[in-house]
Image (cartoon, rainbow, N blue to C red; front, side, top):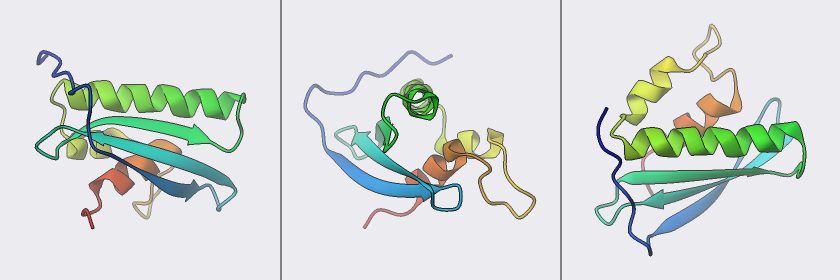
Length: 105
């Protein structure tokens, strides 16, 4: 495994709102980047503070962040996550990864 590449103390970040699961659950995804623009960390919060889904979303963000910091490509994560038969993400994990793969505006 590649050594972890820490992020700078001050870094660019952006927050986007994401819905998944028939639009019922709203998620706020904050994306932190390295100085060269690469993704380096993800934070996920829900509108259901204190629930199990909120805790799972936070844990998912940690796992994605650590994977990125250890050199795992986002495309690799995308292909490892469960998908529906039509290719759509089956869980919030896939929805977040798909969002992260969208071109920057």
